[in-house]
Structure formats: C-alpha cells, structure tokens
Length: 91
Image (tube, rainbow, N blue to C red; front, side, top):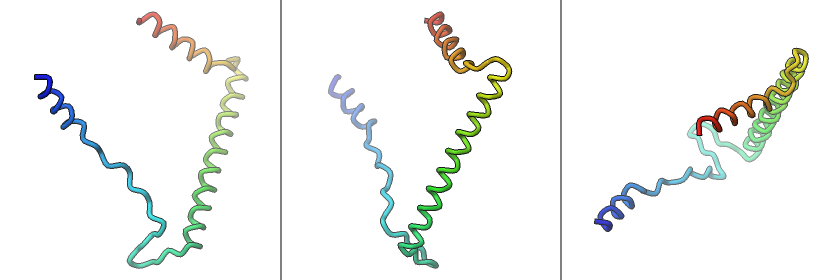
C-alpha cells in the first residue's frame, strides 16, 4: 500500500521545466538585432526601471508628509501591530 502511494506521489510531482534562458542573440525575420541595438535596449530598460523606483520613492515621501500633517505619522507601524493583535486573538 505504501509503495503504491509513494508511486502516486512521484507521478504527481513531475518536474516542471524551468524558465528558458534568453539567448545572447535575438533573431527576428525582418530585423537583425546588432549588439549596439541590444545595449541601447538594455540601457533604456535600466533607465525606465530607475525612473519607476524614483517615482515610487517620491510617492512614499509625499504620502508620509501628508500623513504627518494629519497626525498619523506612524500609521504603518500601527496597522502592523493591530494585525499582530488580531492574529494573536484568533489563535
């Protein structure tokens, strides 16, 4: 019986293939991507990611200033503590 269960578990736990690694060369039927084009694309992507991080940080600063103005500067800590209390009561 245990052997049959073990075989069923092994069948259910099929190994999924991992994400395919991006090849070093991008091929398209209409356009040949040169190393210069690839580096420009990477630089552009890095620039967009950095801009997104900057905007996120700016938003968080503005949010914290607004919360401070209405007297709730530690609201994140407050909510974390309340969630911990609720979990404690539920347990």
